[in-house]
Image (cartoon, rainbow, N blue to C red; front, side, top):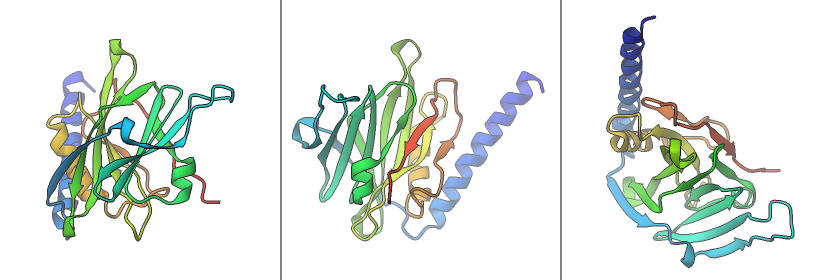
Length: 210
């Protein structure tokens, strides 16, 4: 296949991916009504696990932070990698889950919450900066927000913010179309839109229910 043919095929694949998630979103009765924004402020968080330099992996930390109303944010960091979950979460997620990327990474503190029917947040979008500065990728992570009656939260999809055209709107379409019915620990989150060479593979551990 020529390079031109490969480029055309990639564009078609991107278009089909975008149309697919938008069709699901438009057919969903709980289509998000809009967005709300908050900042992750670590100085305001409650410490769950503090770093212990005397233990293996002693740089690990876990904190519970203010989010949007009653919907909290669970932030974890270890070995220069970060993980985040949103909303009402079951104990196994709080204690064990860590969902990040293989390369070193850190996140932008701004959180975009997608608001669904009844005014509740159903998804959250956060930008991760992945890899070293010389070849750093930017990935929008779209996550399901845990609800009081279903304490499940996890990534549902990813958008390469450098390779995908109109990446923010694509991430919103993924959030609106997939988050509500995504089955954490069962369904596999994937990239939507174009994926460039700076887009890292996710590192997923949802927690132990045992």
